[in-house]
Amino acid sequence: MATKALAFTFSFNDLFGSKAPPHTSAKVSVFSVRCSSGNGERPWKNSDARLLLEDGSIWKAKSFGASGTQVGEVVFNTSLTGYQEILTDPSYAGQFVLMTNPHIGNTGINFDDEESTECFLSGLVIRSLSISTSNWRCVKDLGDYLTERNVMGIYDVDTRAITRRLREDGSLIGVLSTDNSKTDEELLQMSKSWDIVGIDLISGVSCKSPYEWVDRTKEEWEFSSSEGPRDTFHVVAYDFGIKHNILRRLASYGCKITVVPSTWPASETLKLNPDGVLFSNGPGDPSAVPYAVETVKNIIGKVPVFGICMGHQLLGQALGGTTYKMKFGHHGGNHPVRNLRTGRVEISSQNHNYAVDPATLPEGVEVTHINLNDSSCAGLAFPAQKIVSLQYHPEASPGPHDSDNAFREFIELMKHEKNQTPNENLHQLQSV
View 1 (spheres, rainbow, N blue to C red):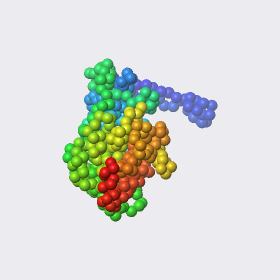
View 2 (tube, rainbow, N blue to C red; view 1 turned 180 degrees about the horizontal axis):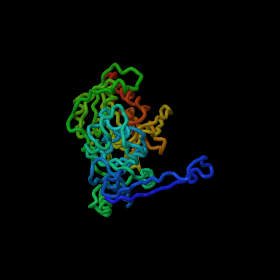
View 3 (cartoon, rainbow, N blue to C red; view 1 turned 90 degrees about the vertical axis):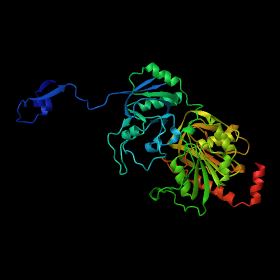
View 4 (cartoon, rainbow, N blue to C red; view 1 turned 135 degrees about the vertical axis):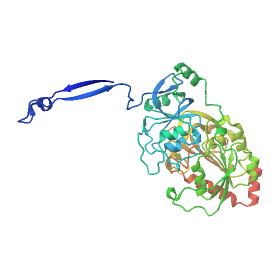
């Protein structure tokens, strides 16, 4: 191993100029610094990954988590906290999530904040990976967690520049790779030959058989100050990629919940004689799952229904409306929404790339909420068919709890239906 020695000699005049202390020696002792060169490991990591977008741009980065090559749609999320809930949100299937908050990983990982049993996103893109964790619930760090879940991650990349590009050009397909044997041209071809539009992503995240859900929001995390309902309502929840905290909030409001797969027949649901049906959030294009739209058609008007995100979009299509792909979607915990009935503004948690076109909906359907960033439809109601829906997440997780009252509105809808006389119910069914 070769070494080089550098000798330095300073005078006090060099250090202090004309203000050198009196009675000091003109010179100080010589000292040496030895620098070694050899094959020792560097204290930092070199770039070993590439994110290549379909527009041809190449972003060098450092990898963490799993290795390999993965294709997906790149979207940005503006949430400041809650990266673990985002990682386990099934609605991100088929997507790379870029966090605009630069510092990620500082609270590590705990098992209480997971929104599903798996990570369904294609990869995580961040600016700075925390070198340490500090949280009383932490059980492991983010890198180890992603490795165990076989999820790729990259850091030390200019997330601000990529976000600006996505805002200007719209969501882009990207390829993330740690494989040096693949050329940039090969990765670019992969990005151009894959498209998230028209793919049924719901079937890959839904449960395979029905099950009962009983867990409520834990007492230490309960934020609703009002008393729970005295009545118990049986809700059938269609799992299009449902988040655990949606189920917890329903249970906290006194619901008995049966979760069913996305392909569960409407006739089987109605045999359960539920007080209401929830159509959950989920990933991808609602137009790619016509079987789900058909299921929704066969249920609406018969029992009260509540749609969230994908469920909202499926209700829009089932009512005869159309959906469209947004430029870069809404992803984050800070989206302002106005309740048009009350004038109240809610700060909401959102995650969707598609929206319902309200101009295509039939007479009688009311737009109840709008997104104040772009005036897109954020909520619907159709009283004649006992329908309420939101394009965003009333359970948040992560995000603010401004919209939690939407669950109470669903409860009130079921309560009103339950208290009607048999003749009133018969009249409504005949008019559907």
